[in-house]
Length: 443
Image 1 (cartoon, one colour):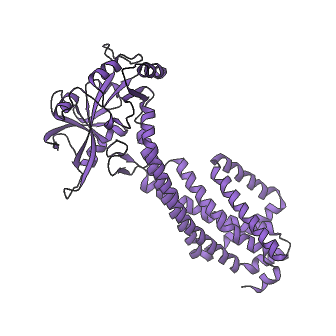
Image 2 (tube, one colour):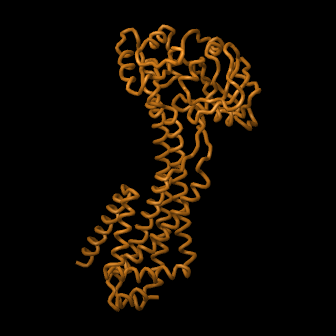
């Protein structure tokens, strides 16, 4: 009978743990704050809460005496949070740079069924037909803001290359004068724009950093030498590209009048539906149209999911190690304080204050570890520049920055407190169940 009760009790405890973790994972910061306020009121207004506060103060006051074991818990959880937040911030930074590239005010047209610009081909006739679609904005001179663009994948030596194998992939985009108006966020920050008909390039800041490019420098793309004449900034994926004159690029790469895509600026955000409907309704035209916001957001999904899964898997593995460390520490703490806990229970303290006090002690250590890990992740990784190894989703080698956002820090803190909750629950229940007579004989 006792074994059956013990089994049922343990099953109930596991159910509490599983339910608590699920609820905690879904909890928002304001809900957590509300629960904290309610818990604090319970500790102030109710007798059992005041007893819990008294037991907690005693336990917390002994932490300096257990500095070594407490530090193991704090450092272990800090490592979990730092690694988790760092990996998730990489996914966040990659996603942000692509989402910032797109807008509801611009649309991109590709050959139907094309996965990306590099696999699309539009003929001169296709381009002329696309330009006749309604909803395309015009500049002050009445010219259509439509930019037919040629995209070529090229290879360049990486910055600091020491061998011929240190090669990176970069997108070389051939554009005309209208591209600067369609993509108005692209600004020259050093040097000048390329000249029409010349083998000249301007490099995005990310590409300039990755391939060590400066105005006046000559680079070799295929059989031809090109001169870098400027550096531009856009704050999005364009920063990882090289731009040159579309006609010159088409001549060098023998593309004739064909282009990979047409990017247009719309009259307004509501104009896209009519623009797309017109193109889809033409029987002699096989194209796909989407806003650039949707296009680049879709490009970010695959890599972002992979990075997040990797972050969660690595974080989970490290969390298991930190959890065992917390369990070991708290079981040792309960064993050391067995006589103290037994004395409290002997003078009238029930099991609830003891359980909550031990768990609060563990979660305090977890909170310190979570804050430390979040601070480390923010100081080391926020704004850290990185790039994809090669072309991903037809985007070439993409430069981006890690983004340690407040939601990521909150998620890291939730992981820390979840570890503290599980790591403190089992030792706390053991302390509450320990018979007074047996506890007084311990230690």
